[in-house]
Picture 1: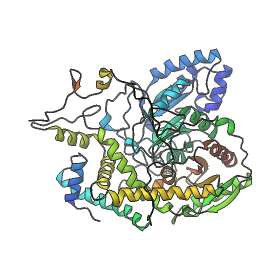
Picture 2 (picture 1 turned 30 degrees about the vertical axis):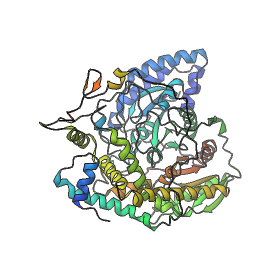
Picture 3 (picture 1 turned 90 degrees about the vertical axis):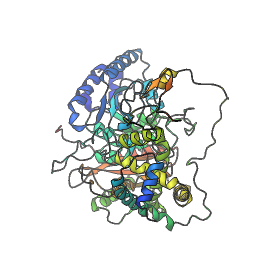
Length: 494
Length: 95
């Protein structure tokens, strides 16, 4: 029997259904692994008691023979998801002590299917960051190491999710992705992560960052697990007016690995100046793999790619400044101690100065500025027009018959924690250069581990699909996964 | 476009975030770095382009105009830093 903690979701599901293992055994093994993984700082709040209860209930359900795919499967949940009665604070001090009185739609669907929650996972504060270093809990650590032995970032913002899945501290995890926050950490830790089409998963009960860009998605060991978990997370929700009223296919059943005749676009604008040779090589290898699998490779152009990051850094902060206005020290979380004579304005200002970390403050203020009188047209409206052009670029190539687009997932492998300390904020933003276009265009995108660099660290490739065609996208990713044959795991040092 | 400390002070005030006077120059400098990056958008020809309002074409659904929620003040107030007699409590706002 494989070590329980190393099972895939599909493997665990089948073993549970056969009765080879119980969810209680599996959950106990994972709880022990979680406790042994404290050095990685992946879990911000552990919930072993919740997990034990859910595992017991799952075993009952499994006995009845009516168990959905996720029944009895231990998962980690990103701290951005509201979970009833369990701390949910978006890794921010301003939500210290916040325990939601309600359950997010995505987690309620996972629990409906019998999933087990091991705890809440570390992340960048309000999902703003690419290295997990903006978290009030301190940075999560990547289980992968290079020869220096330094602590590396698991990426961000879903860094705790990535670290936990890669280090076998859960079988799968939820993530969210506003500019690359599922795909970049997945690439940095050698796991699979998919951001579905905007509207596929309900955003209700997920603490909002930039509402027109935020999407939840699964982070898993492989493509099949991503297909299984995505199906459970997806679906229409009347409580999110942007959630799509479309049927959710059985994504797993669509994994045939047959991509003969599919047209894969290779966008020339993603060949960035100064791109490391290893990334270039990985991309070239990926192209060859898909070609060998019978796909037609086509050079394409997405001319407005260069403007995606600057547009994002107008739109996302603008929406964040509006969404984060609710943290005022009145309804939930932290309130600053007030001095003699302080009124309500001082309460707001002191609470927000104490409660928000530096990066969040900066983005809220940038957002405030670009929305302020006299600048709204010059910045915000211009950015929204550029966003329309970025989407049009994709619409055109899809209309010309392209089925999916292959790009690198990140411009580098994982870097050391602290390495970007003295860099200006724009340097950190460049991490999302390959992923952010997908959010702006509302498309599904998946990161698949495809190789190791010279330092022995994982690298990922990204596939971008047509809207609502996650099933087809997952199947192309499945073919790529099979061709790449990535099976490396980090050596346990923690 | 260059942001000076006066603008930084005004933006902090609008955002209701207290920034100490001595931190304003550094903040203004960070803003300038970010805005300098954003300035690239001026290179794009956006004539005749409508600003995006919704990334997927969709009609907002309507529902019956009926009460679907409410009557749970305890839950609403459960996380308040200061709640009294069924209300959120804040410092005095009127003289």
